[in-house]
Image 1 (cartoon, rainbow, N blue to C red):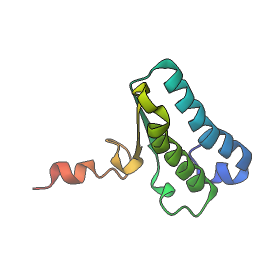
Image 2: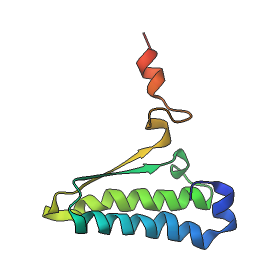
Image 3: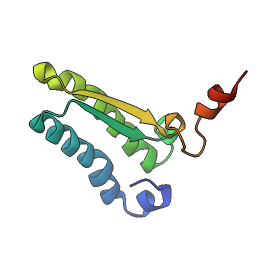
Image 4: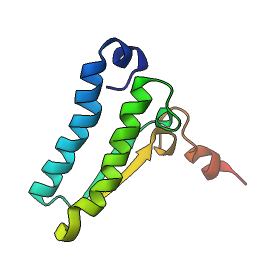
Length: 100
C-alpha cells in the first residue's frame, strides 16, 4: 500500500502488504535463487509519523537484514526511496544531471 489515507483506514492491510509482503518477497527470492532484489521505498520511511511510513520503514529494515539472512545463497537486497528513482516526482536525479 502506498497511500497514507489508505493505510490509516486499513491498518491490518497495511501491515499485511508492506511488512508481510516484504517477507514473502524475501523468502521467494531466496527460494528461487534470484540474484538481486531492489525494494522501492518512500521518504516517509525516514522518521515516520504515520502507519504508512512505519510499515515502509519496517519493510526497508527487512530487506536490508535479508542480506545477512541470505548467507551464502548470493542474493543481494537493496532499498531505494522515491527521490532516488529516475522519473519519479521529487527525484533528485535531474538536479545532479543538469547541474553545471
